[in-house]
Length: 305
Ligand SMILES: [Fe+2]
Image (cartoon, rainbow, N blue to C red; front, side, top):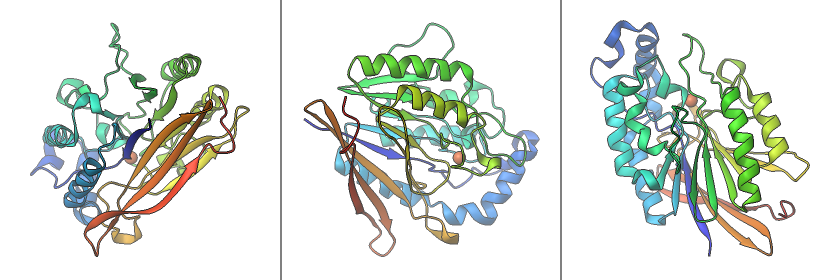
């Protein structure tokens, strides 16, 4: 019996709430608000994101992975709108969310900000401490491991950091889940390998994260942030780890950006081997609908468990 899940990212939900850019006088918000008005609002169309949700739901995936940047400038009203958007996407137990740099665009008290998305970032075993990431959610024979790479950045940066504590727990989780026979899907906003993002936008500890992945392996790593489709492989001793990036879920294609996509994964296990088939569902502006533009299989030659 196959297990299917959807991957989407970088909704950048608009329009910006009135006056949001100027709230609390955060300069980064003001600049982010100007950037939205000049360029981003032409790239990100909430109607496309809504059509994407309709298309995902029509496929009835067993789970939905959303790798962050739901909002734009971390205004309080954006979190409220974001929570409503998530609610329309699916129930918290059915949707896993990892925050992006725009979800932590400026420092916002947790209770006024990311708390709105908390139910989608909570692991099966809620830890008694305030350590929230990585969360682990077990869905049949698939484990979703969610990392947070979101932290407020200086004016010109859009980077992120996973941090030592999350990396240590990630290594433990990957080892344990492999032992228990789970398919391991790692989720985070930023591209996890060095060189996949320009320095200004990169994960500061991508080298350390790729070391953990190289050591412990994973069946797939899903990310967003670059607003482009990337299918990479990280070579490891136990076979390549697929590292996949998806374009923005709301992209109009304006300014030669990649058109909106979501990716459908269907996972099956036979004779001790995982088989993953990826369907690339892309927005077609002429038909005003999503359709499959590519389908391919992973793990055929490698990844024998
Ligand atoms: Fe991002």
